[in-house]
Image 1 (tube, rainbow, N blue to C red):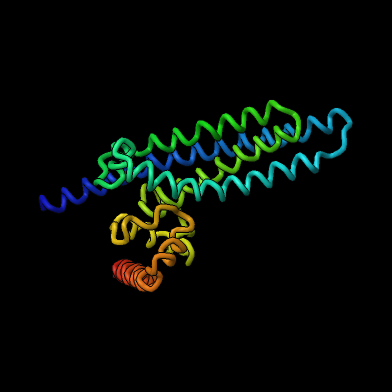
Image 2: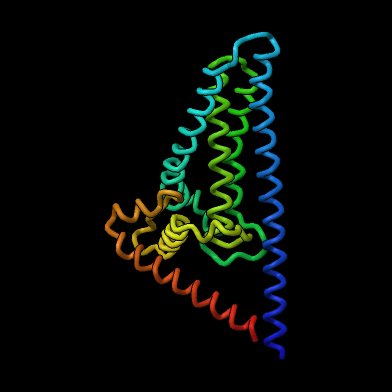
Length: 237
């Protein structure tokens, strides 16, 4: 009876933590996305309001830099994660909290997310205020960093570490490989590889860990199927 009560309390505490972080994640994502959408719309309408031609070049520069910055952030994340957060003792002071059991909805490592958001906001603001191609490039770069950050939060924090539920994206084959790849990072079996997130499986394949990744993904699928079957059976009873 006492053990059951402790389990119930732990489950309730975890649900509260998930709801707290989920609210923060969704609120931040909706707010940033809405601001980015408004800023993009406003930049275009400024051209049209002055009887200028539709700013195709402006829009193309914004989209190109957004895509390039998002990809570049994966490369940056791979470098900074290894060299600055793991190999650097000062950087590891905060990152260490991510490799230890978490108490509460947040961890010291979350500060890095705020730090990375600063240049993104600065680029977006500067690009928004500068009505030329250079402004479009800066705005696109800031937008790409922002979109990467939102995606990283939902995949890394929500899907991989289950800090909040993410819904059906957990069933996508590519997402399963990302989850298992990051689990291998935490095991430190391959010297911490992968240090990136979305291209983590490719990092593992590059060091010869592809077969183990495939095996672990198959085990991951089997475990989820078994759990789903047990849950369905309990529901029928």
